[in-house]
Image (tube, rainbow, N blue to C red; front, side, top):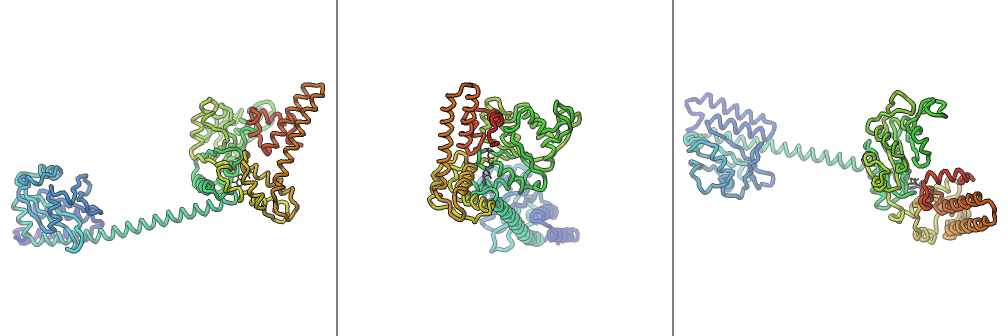
Length: 522
Ligand SMILES: Nc1ncnc2c1ncn2[C@@H]1O[C@H](COP(=O)(O)OP(=O)(O)OP(=O)(O)O)[C@@H](O)[C@H]1O
């Protein structure tokens, strides 16, 4: 019997037309399925109608919004049979189908009344195409009889498959377009970052894999407002990197404020950072803005952070967490919004273990850790660095730009550079001074510096011997100390951190002695 020819024909026909219209208006495959399932159920008085969806890999059937999954090659459930036959399939009294013992299917059977029949339609827009899914209609034997006889049911199912397919196509097209768009955005982003990283090449020189990767990380860190912790041996370029990071960050037009925590006496460090008000301590004759406030909107670079005293570490942590601080002697709090970059050549973890550095500050500073490799680990960079320094010095001195002989380059390659790039730079500068203008730097010019250092050290030894002749022991000791420090500083290309380390002196003590002996002023 045709359902539209039933005694309620006008109502049913109206409903059928409404259903067809609703499917045509549906905005997604899921909406088509939902209209089809609901309307079939109402029109034919069924217990339940499920619209099973074929997964993209064509291996299973799933139901919108549910977890149940039926594999297409598992013939313990009837959906696999329907898919294989690709035509309508009827199961009378589903509870009496012992071979269909799929646990999921049995759960469904238990959820419907006794004597329920099942009619399955394989939904496909046409026979040549892969099925979209299976429509499972559960109902009494009579309603399933009506369903099977009904032309209207067939029309609705065909319409459902058609609109499902149409919506699926436009959804696939939208998804493809979205994927394309987002991969284009990613591509553009990557390209922008690559260009930015490339642009940093003039500031942070190096073509080794490690340096190329480091520049990319610098660009990434610059995009965020995270705290950056630079770790690396002395002279590896931590200062250069901090400045480069600031210059390619959105804070570039705001101040870059740097402080070396090791170079400033402990007693002054706090007031340098936080500022003070007039009369806060003896000598504080006027209000003074601290570096934290000066860095507002920009970047605060804390070099040698490992040398910051513990009590100041706690205060720094508080500023980083809250953005608030109080200048020395002030009653009011101030605010500053800055990005912090900290640098250290000391292993901070060891300092934490020794109770000299706060673990919480370490983690707060190291939100974006960057490790700067030693020059020895990227010897491939020596030539580019050397040539760049030669060019820069020549331009600075207004001399014709010269090159480096291959013997000079291989001599550089053979050196160890404990002072890293700083040492290389000093070697080049000295060699250039020893080379007549217009001539390439040769190996003899490089060796001249070592010879000069040797003489200087020899002279120091002579001085030390000569001191035996003096009668004032304290003065002799001071002169000897000064000679040792001078020689060691010369050996480490003026690097006080390395000098202090090699003499087992705190950097602050070395700084004090240099001041006392006027080293570095002559
Ligand atoms: N990658 C680099 N490109 C260009 N110049 C560099 C690079 N690395 C270091 N330099 C130069 O080497 C010298 C030392 O660099 P910098 O002061 O940045 O090192 P550092 O790691 O901060 O040293 P320290 O730990 O002793 O403070 C500077 O003159 C700097 O210009």
